[in-house]
Image: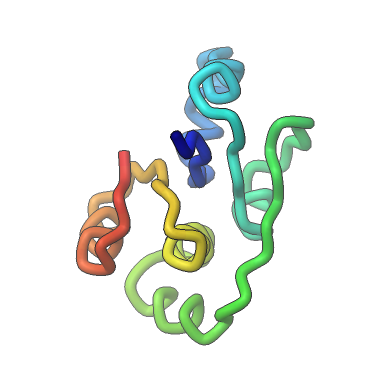
Amino acid sequence: MNNIIIADSTCLIGLERISQLEILPQLFTSILIPPKIAEEFGINLSWLEIKNITDRGLVFALKMLVDEGEAEAIALAYETNLKIILDDRQARKVARNMKIIFI
């Protein structure tokens, strides 16, 4: 079973604030984040893997609908065909329309 997920910054920040960040590597074998999420989160963790997006045009288009970090995270999920952790209603709507599975 593919147990890799993409995380948005709000998920990481929220878990960090309640001292529960370690739950992610316990639940998933790999947690990927795009560069903008790494910048927004600002904490370097050995189990977070920064992965670049190849389709910058997709990111540009998505930035018209959601913020830059969410745009990169959604684009990465789309490119890799992986699930994504999203909290923002608009970002979930965009992901749903792109047939991206989110939690």
